[in-house]
Length: 75
Image 1 (spheres, rainbow, N blue to C red):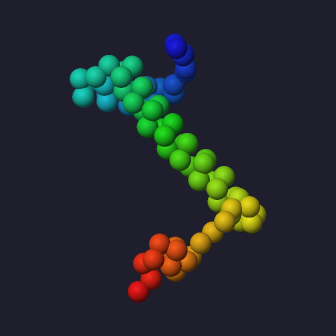
Image 2 (cartoon, helix red, strand yellow):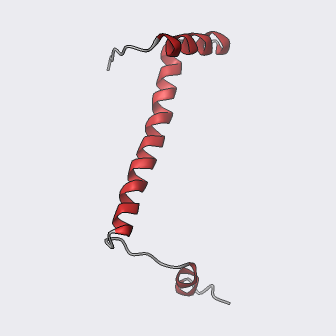
């Protein structure tokens, strides 16, 4: 899928420099940046949703002692 975006001049300069220094195309650099950034955003937003459920009492929480005991690891 082709996407067109406008980058601030400073960001475009940084991208040009990165591509030049690494011998990669700007497309390759942008693809990797988007994939890594998307993973980070997914992790953040999904974790934030779980935290909200925990705080609202909608998610079961266990202490380390409870987990150890349920796994038979309590010595």
